[in-house]
Amino acid sequence: KAAAGTFDFLLCTVSAEYDINAYLSLLGVDGQYVIVGAPPTPLALGAFALIHKRISVAGSLIGGIKETQEMLDFCGKKNIVCDIETITADQIDVAYERTV
Image 1 (tube, rainbow, N blue to C red):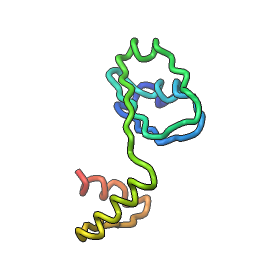
Image 2 (cartoon, rainbow, N blue to C red):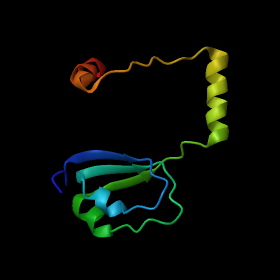
Image 3 (cartoon, one colour):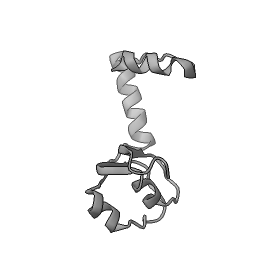
Image 4 (cartoon, rainbow, N blue to C red):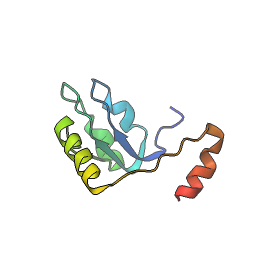
């Protein structure tokens, strides 16, 4: 409840049944909710929350195992790699500033 209306953007990766309206309540005016997970049943969406706060709901297909493997193969052929840095919780502020 304390976080209600405080987010501008939520990215949902949940592929199980859940109450989308509980998450929509976290968004502020003009908030965006993007779904990339695929729940097994349709979501029950309360239209009033969308209308009242002008919330946008969108979806994006991120691909399955086949597409992920193709991407990894492509990266391997082109020598595309990533940098990973592990930090502790007390280093979050410094890491965030470096990212910005």
